[in-house]
Length: 310
Image 1: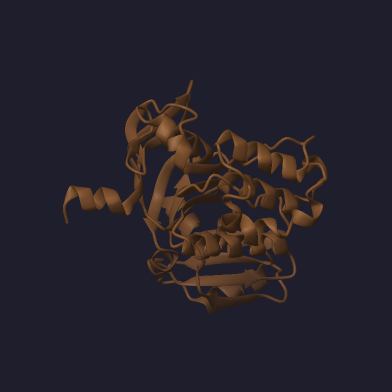
Image 2 (image 1 turned 135 degrees about the vertical axis):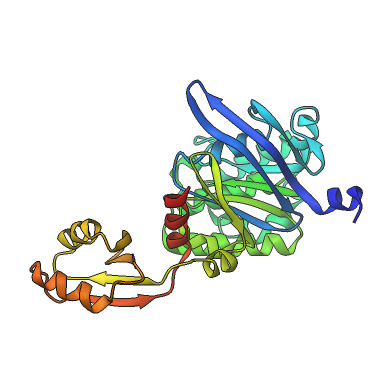
């Protein structure tokens, strides 16, 4: 495959990108590529460097080192061309609170020298859900409706690459599910989507993901491949006193890792240590109704394992 074919099939490319804020290294020598028509997820906690990376790629800030392209355009030299062909939905709701739904959409269409009517088919499935409230001020919308309006405004100029920075943060579960359904439909229309989220359960909805922490990638692959590479047998432990259980597990030299996950504690155990022996020792410490069962790992388990070894 020649270089021109590679460029044609790559929507986003980063090579050695770094960004510092005084003494804080927000992004550290990051390199990755996103293929055209792909949903690529940046998965990591707050402060991992996701927003800084987004701002570099959308030409809002300059990297300290490295190079990056979007649609083959350099983020420094060709920033005007990039701004014409990308849509950006920042983490915080950034539309005009005092303007109505329709006025916000008309404003963003005008900025890009287009109209709502010209690109209505692209946003129809999303906008139709908030169109009955088109005369309502944006500041009075619910979280889910604000999300749909922001996405409509990011799409109104028909971008080929869409940047969504933590779009589902603070949104109810039903709206989160609806939103990801919208992204799947946008992908079918050939739009490349780079989305960041702190929610590990959303990772499985992406084609590929990059697990990121402290400005560095821990792993880049498909969700299934990352899970299949989990190297340990994983167990879910429970007892009547979960707080004490977590402390006792972490104090046990045979427990390799232990993290609270919802109503249980996920643990990995040294090979020469039997689960039955662990249960007996916990009983001797006064634990009651102990349950330790084998489970399949998820993305969050993989993230925790990789972050420990980083």
